[in-house]
Image (tube, rainbow, N blue to C red):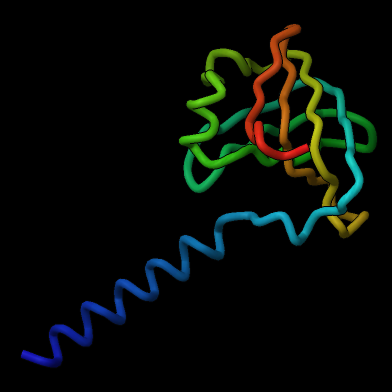
Length: 121
């Protein structure tokens, strides 16, 4: 009886660790505000967080969004991000200057602002 319980607990711990490592926290990003404007190449509004590929200065950027509940709360839907749409992302650039990646607090698409992290200033 004990072995199945230990096995189940171990599997649950591994699953939680995998999900947590896939989620992008704020520690890997600079404190300074950053803004990026460009054109949507592709967008995925999925867990653990959304991602928009944006062609902008220097190449194609990974514009990391919030987790799905925050994306939904902001009212952002996949049809708002078709390929070719013009976007402006406001947030924080990745600490590694070689990575074309940012974590987004606010996303502007077609003049509409989606506030993904309304409590962050």
